[in-house]
Each structure stands twice: as C-alpha cells, then as structure tokens.
Length: 287
Image 1 (cartoon, rainbow, N blue to C red):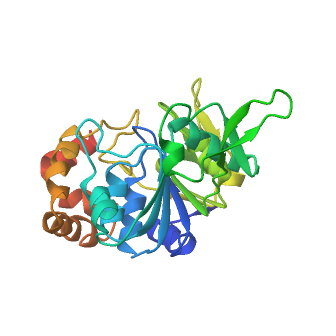
Image 2 (cartoon, rainbow, N blue to C red):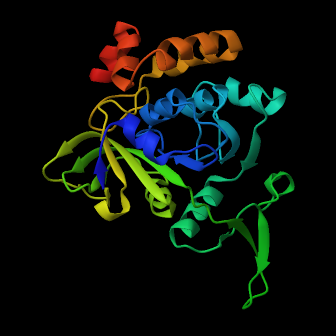
C-alpha cells in the first residue's frame, strides 16, 4: 500500500486503454480522481460505473473514453448528460460504445468479478428491451429446474477508484453512509486507488459501514473534499447549485470546453480546482 499524491497515483496505475471504474453512489463520488485523469490526458478508456453522472460527462467530453458500461446515466435531479449524449449521438469528441445494464445487472457483474467467476446470474431483464440492444446480456438454463436465467459477464476493472471518508495509517479504508457497489468494485479490480477525506490513527466503524482491508488497496491519497460537488457524509453536503449550473455549462461544446480548460486543465490539483470556483461554491465544499 502506497500513500502518495493523486498525481502520482494516477500516473502510476492508470494507463491508456484500460477498464476503469470510478464508483460511488449519490455521495463519495471520486471527482478529484476523475479530474486528474483528465489532466494527465488519458485516452481510450473503457469507463465503468453504476450511475455515471457529472464526472463521467466531463471525462467523456474531454476525450478520455472509448466505451461506457453503466446502468443509468444522467445529471441527478436535473436531466441529461449533454456530453454523453453528444458522444453517443454525434461521436463528439469521438465515438463512444455503450453497454447498458440494470442496476442489478451491474451489481451482479461486479460481484462475479470479485469472486473471480466468469459471469453472474440473476432473475432480471424480463420484459425490458435491454437484451435486444446489449449482446452482453445472455442466459443459461438451470440444470435443476430448466429455468432460463439471465447472465452478464463478470466485471474486472484494471483499476477501481473510490473516495472514502477515512483511511488509517496502515491503509485500511472506511466507507459509511449510502453504499452502492464500492466494495464489489474494489474487490473485482486488479488495482485499487482510494482518495480519502483524512488519514486517522484508528477507524471507528459504525454499524453497516464498510472497511476495506489494506491488502486490497494499492494507493491511499488524502484529498479533502475529493468528492465535491457530490457530498461525503459527515464532512460536507452536496452542492445542488453546481449540478443545476452544469446543465447550461455542458449543453454546448464551446462553453463546456472553456469551463474545463479554466477549472480542470488550468488548475494543478483538486485544491486548485476548488480555489478556481466562485467563493460560494468553495464555502459549500468546506462546510
């Protein structure tokens, strides 16, 4: 386990052409890590995420991605991801292959990956159109009952990146609050990078929290407010105004590109990104 800067972690573990999962569910979304991938100019990535939102819109719009595997994509509570739509519908800034699943299908794929199984089975995809547009969704016949059961291929990212509240000095990771598929995505990956709000001497894990042991973690990166503009339970709230503003920022290519050049490419790190934002936004991230 390596404790290092975010620049060092991305430079060491994230390479062009890899399958990369940046997981988080409503909060603990690794925005800072996604921005660093953009700064370092990674290309041809297969992005995986149960619920891609603004950070994947930004990565896709900046030309990082060749493919997206997901189960829902949008600006939560606002509407479409305009850069994602532009890539799918008009191949800007390049063509984007998509593999759409249900939430249950994505969770099952990560779980199979974590167990090092070749595929997952689930009673799903019944009565919807996803199997018709996603050839990865297949089925098998149960040898005991004859029932047809849907299958999805296991998901084994080259690198999974998470944001968490805390790490201890040995590299054990604490995630608490609403949890999505972070644990499964972490255990399914070949490499795991975790950005954290802080490093502490001892983890105090409440009921239903997740502790990832240090031996599955390749790099721990202290990044305060690393999930902003999403929230980190116990540290800061979601900046809803940012999500609303993003709809106009990302709607047109020119305004999107100018914003990314100013606030991401034009800043050295996440602290610089936060300083580049209006004072009100910085205050919300520090609350």
